Image 1 (cartoon, rainbow, N blue to C red):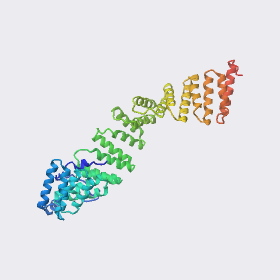
Image 2 (cartoon, rainbow, N blue to C red):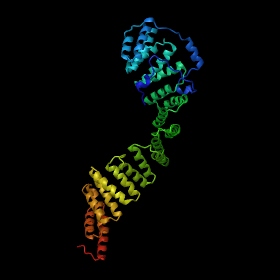
Image 3 (cartoon, rainbow, N blue to C red):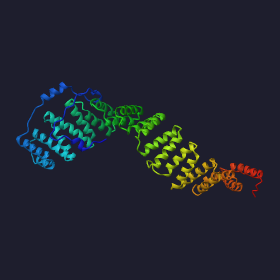
Image 4 (cartoon, rainbow, N blue to C red):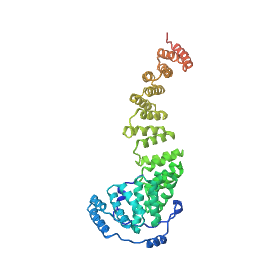
Length: 432
């Protein structure tokens, strides 16, 4: 949440700071006192009004004319040639030269010379106020966050103004400093001073609560933000994620579904989050169909793992033919031998469940080429089962004997062997 030079410099050259309407705020929450209007007026009247010397005034007018012609570098050169007396002339010239440096994107020079100008505290009230604010703004951009807070505070205490933009800058500086709890008072002060809801303020408050793991408060802020700024569609997935962190999966799914149906989701991770929520809430068919739709549309990357996710969800939904097809696609696409073997194994096992017995032997045999030795035993058992139910008892015996050579399958293989033999004998089939 950083601000660009252009945003800071849009109206800074030779323009007085506009005064904002005062809005009540709890100054004690900000960590400093804000003077009332009467105090500010008294200080304003008591401040000495000075005028620049004729030579400095003339140089500034010449520079201003060049600035209006968009000859910023020439304007800077005019002021850099001056050698003002220490005191008011020096500060007054530095105030305008600093503005020109900022307009020329020389933010480091601008900050140095403007800070020197306001630190002398000899400028007229309007110039001093404008200088303090600009030093605070540029300091924020230049990542001098403590300095930004110092000069923006000085501006508030100098002017007595409750300015939404200034409080937003201060909230952002605290965010950059990881002073997460201190964000909230300034964000609220900005909100109170603003006539319109501000997306950045809600983001800062949400970040404050998130970083402190205060998820219920983050949820409350996002709900409020969506009520005020429904057009900020990126908040819907964020809100759903916070519901997940609170383990309120039903509310999370409801939120994501609303966003999905409204067309607010446009990122792969968002579609995957919706798929995950469907699976978590026991709606595997929707999970599979949603994942499939967005893979085919190109919204989700074509990868073996993503294909396997579709297969897993179809499997849980008992859509076996779809699951078989997607496991096959996953196996063909996978570059990882272990994954490839596992996808073929799952495809074969599901084909057995789907009564595609002889067809199941093809992916099961492929799985043997990729899986580790200790995985082969259960694949031999699956092959024995597939051939048995497919009516090929000799092949079933062959693979049950292979399975019996593995410690983990030996007991099951012996039971199956006896069953195969008795079934074959009952049907008059010789196995020898």
